[in-house]
Length: 103
Image (cartoon, rainbow, N blue to C red; front, side, top):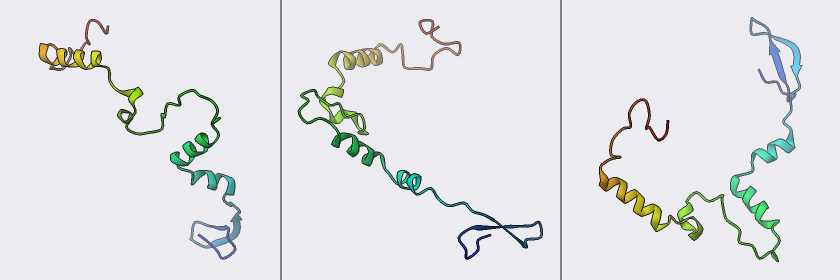
């Protein structure tokens, strides 16, 4: 039960206040960190990058990797998926004991 003094009053089994207080206060540093979003963290990381470093930065914090050319699926992988679908060998559930190659 809350009281006007900012602490918590511990109630006994009858719902009556005993006058003892839990003096829990929020840790303001942790509360500030808790308000930080993943976008905020990425902005902090990005602002600390060396602008003179010529290496390419791969953005791993974006939800859709297909927006970046470095994450595009190769034609070899696409062809393998199409071939698997057309073969009819992989259009069902695997055996309950697993695929032999995986075992």
